[in-house]
Image (tube, rainbow, N blue to C red; front, side, top):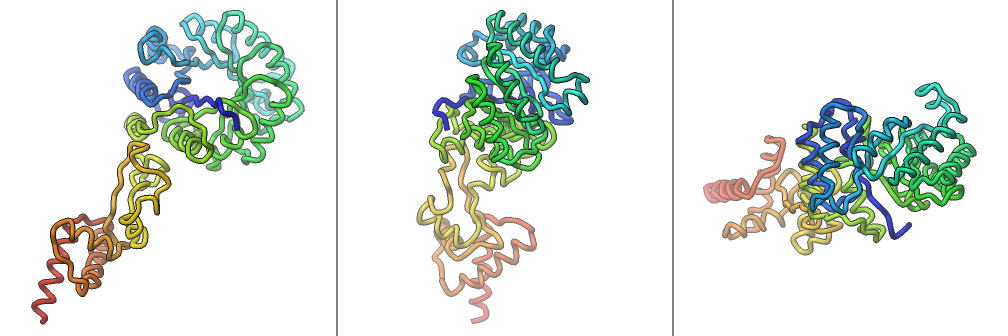
Length: 384
């Protein structure tokens, strides 16, 4: 895996294309600021050709490119494979453009009513035009999972000869396994020296795995969205990708990981969708422990059941009292409240705690534990 990997966030473009989402200017600017605060420096900000408020937002973003937070950011405008779209984005002041074009026969014929010959000439013309305008040029191979491999190699060669800076390999419907996606990256890597970008959808839950496989096969750039939002089942999650690379592959992509929880919260509010408790990295349960064996270990050494400290990603640790709790946590909570623990009462207390948790269908807190222990102690004393 390369040491110069570049994370590019597309929450404001592909993320917003999730059915039912529509970010206002205020919302897009807020998310942009949070992305920048978290250290994201490559951001696909939207589609100028949409016009309306989207265009107003993108014009304001372009006008603010010399703001302190934006001076070292690369902001990418997404375009259809249409010269007027590309020209418009460059005229707005964007120094990086992406050109979306499909490479599978299914998409060429079904979506555009075109053929391979048209694709080759169009891609060549658009890349050369944009490069002549002096901008960074990224171009797609959309629906790469259903693209003929020999044609994909030919297309990659043409893209490279045309002067493109980057080629995006889009598994548009998420149908590839990690092995298959890596193989396609390898085919393109052998056909061109142009930098490659992973763009993997999550239809089978493999977006993160496929992206990691693509990076191991030689890609440099990769796409993510905050909270995995995006079309259909979404995209690779920013938090999962950045932490997996940092912790499992020793690759730091510049993310201020302590900001991940706040960034996730901001996008959750914008999408009006709560973060599920077991969402990796940022979910509320990631650093929550209830099982008796787990809590006993955590009370001795926090590393026993956590792969990294919650502070690293802006999270916090919780010890949860519930159906699966054990003696260690009950004793700990009682001691915190200055209550001398009678070991003979713990088993009965624990039985009562579990019953109450089942009755509530959820967790108890330390004060509940103290109250139950007091009741058990009083009942035991009366019986004696």
